[in-house]
Length: 340
Ligand SMILES: C[S@@+](CC[C@H](N)C(=O)[O-])C[C@H]1O[C@@H](n2cnc3c(N)ncnc32)[C@H](O)[C@@H]1O
Image (cartoon, rainbow, N blue to C red; front, side):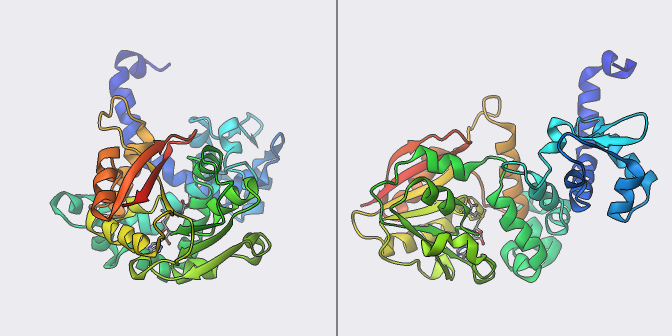
């Protein structure tokens, strides 16, 4: 360890935190260039070959790869060849629950510029709106490339919530599941693969459902419906799901979405929220959870992660009773609620 780190480890640790944005930005660059897919899982590629395949110059690429290698992402050998490490393998698009899309999306332009305006949130503003003059979902509609990246990131999110959701809850007696704000249908695909009986319907914004590919619809077991949850949700399902949807909205909007679900639901239907339950004490909580909470602030202002009591309050206001909270192996829990 270098002298400075040994003499004052707290200073050195804080210095690295201050420089974290550089790491995130370089991770996006190598993900945009598809570097991880160009190196076989157990192979090694010469720098010049890698640079030529990406259409970039070898020297600047090497500087980026050296910096990332110092954080354990890729291995750089003395002969200028590049190999994978366990971390860089997670950037391959064929890695289970790949982090490729997350690396590309988190510092993509929409989010990057919104973070620059974070101060606005301290006085009640919405950083994303200050940066772009429009809300997050309107921005994504106008930037389809970032929007499809967002859908891919949600489908492959580091918390692996969709697989965990399907494994933690018994859907065997269910006929129809409506996934409100279900993105490209990833959660339903996990559930329907595990349980042969249910069918699923995804309600999401028009540009999102239009981009769902026919092969993602599981031979017709999944259908899609374009629309806004604020205007109503499809009737007739016996389970309604809102997975990582409420955390995008302030309390008043959450209650509107929940009321729209309530209005569509039969008395015996169930509502399942898939959300992180925020631990109020950061000494006990997960660092990644607070970073998601801060991301919600940068994108949506007063949208946020919530505690179990806060979910109970929102549900009660919209005509639901919180029945139980089912933990999953991911940080996302299932909050089960019934109409009252
Ligand atoms: C954080 S993502 C979660 C996606 C998915 N449920 C998952 O767990 O991966 C929020 C989703 O809400 C959708 N959404 C945003 N506004 C909506 C609205 N007014 N009505 C329905 N869906 C909406 C977005 O398009 C996006 O797919």
